[in-house]
Image (cartoon, rainbow, N blue to C red; front, side):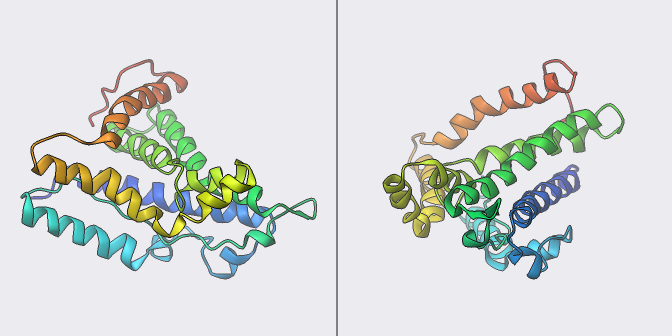
Length: 233
């Protein structure tokens, strides 16, 4: 049976993901790179941001595998189609700084999500949809924080590549090929396997369990609501 808040979660997730990707493309365009614009990616149309494997196939595989083995869906993971960016086309005052400016483009996605979380807090004053807005804040905070993990191709990894000394940045950049696999293995697969063996190993959820209540309350305080969740999520 579908959860009564499934549509709220889906709508909040689509908005958060589409505007996250759009922020990357818009900032890249402002810095002189027309690649995303030429590919038709500077759009609010969610279908233009769907990655066939990351948005559809992988979540379905993960859901089916968990239902078949443990009888429930414990986690899902996926991604939108990455915004295409040509680092060498990025310019500030005519000068190319590909590594540093790619970090700026990467930072635009999480910053957009944090801005949307604040917007959700402000919207609580004028929109009578506390369940949707609660999920909207939570999902944007989760997406923004998760993407700051400093492993390429996560945004945090690209930011780190842009600010680390050259040798360390080159070493980190070479890990991009295995970055997604490492994230899936360390943050999701190993905790699930450990749980099946009867012991707890879940560093991501343990960290998020501490960070998210603080971040959610911070959004509420910054938007004038005081502390506490109390918004139906």
